[in-house]
Image (tube, rainbow, N blue to C red; front, side, top):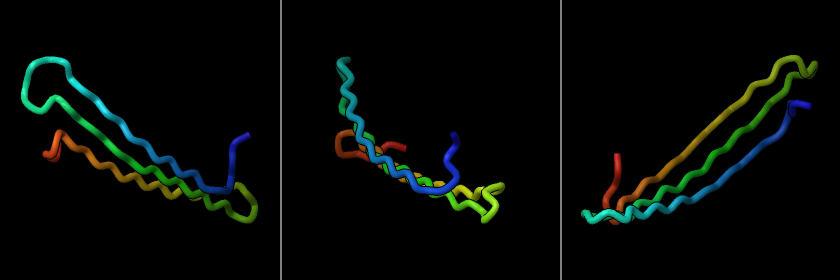
Length: 64
């Protein structure tokens, strides 16, 4: 069954270390993902609101 009403929240963190010689081999990423579903009274139409926030860091410097 497919859900028609509710909310889902996911938080995550990722850490990556490059083993090659080089400047600043450490990289991290953090995120938050939120989904909210609003169903109509008949349950035939569903509005899904989705938001995502991410932060990236490369050993003290922002990564774009």
